[in-house]
Length: 231
Image 1 (tube, rainbow, N blue to C red):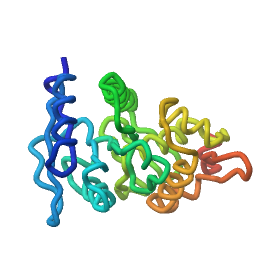
Image 2 (cartoon, rainbow, N blue to C red):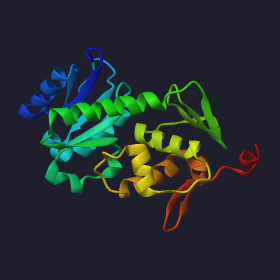
Image 3 (cartoon, rainbow, N blue to C red):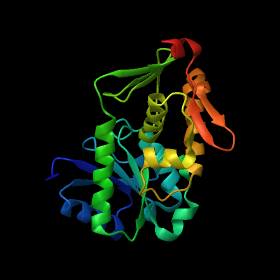
Image 4 (cartoon, rainbow, N blue to C red):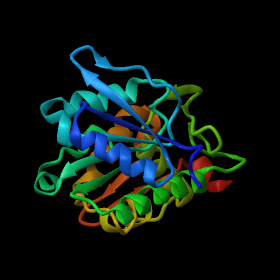
């Protein structure tokens, strides 16, 4: 029973969003529709476990809505799912910062499986300790990231990718391997999303981002500082 877990839907009032909210309630989630308007996002009543951005109803405002979600305090720590029509999937901009996508029309069983998978990944990433490498600190309980003592704001998927690198220092991973480990085998997007996320990690983490090394023709690896390698 998931009646205590809230899922936020960012969209425009209308039949597609109303149907999605009904489907979530049938899956025993508490669905809260956060309407998008020219003034931005309406206030959210409670912090959700997942945010679904309904690209079907938002149209050209979808990019602005994704950015607003990432800046909204109650929403920004939750994984973000893009819900798009199947024909729009190949044209999706992966730099918008969503963590997963669902193609419409969807089956109720698929929606349930995606939400359970996101819940499981989020819970699995949690742990009692802080992970350290070079100037980088990752708190696995609070999902906070710090570089040289300064806090860094990351999306959930950026955090999970960075944690994956930190847990496997020095090892080279192909883009396909990173998609499988971080996004999951069910992810429909292409390997370009890995490049986008690595580029954003480098930009956001400054000196720590220099540890993310491109291995030409293969993929990426995290190279810890020499002093860390000696520990």
